[in-house]
Amino acid sequence: MYRVVEECVKALAETLDTPETQEARRNGRWFTWLLGEAAKSIADRLGEPVVLEAWAVAYDIHVWGFHEAKYGIERVMVGLKYVEQLLNLTRRVLGRVM
Picture (tube, rainbow, N blue to C red):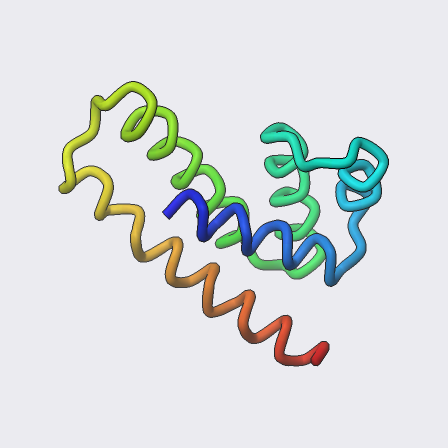
């Protein structure tokens, strides 16, 4: 789920040409903190809080579910609805561009 959210945030940031995209290009990579900043920029620009919600949930699951192995499947599955919403939003936004 984290990877899906990460790729959605990158795709939306690049499509919207956010300042974070420009920073990632200068750095030659996306840092985690930059993805968090991009999620905030995208949510504000689109008026879609699900971007920030999905990022927060995915990062939480990534840290506590993957790295720390503290979450069971039930806790992880709670976040699935946010990931699905972000994926659908990303498809709509990218569909308008292409």
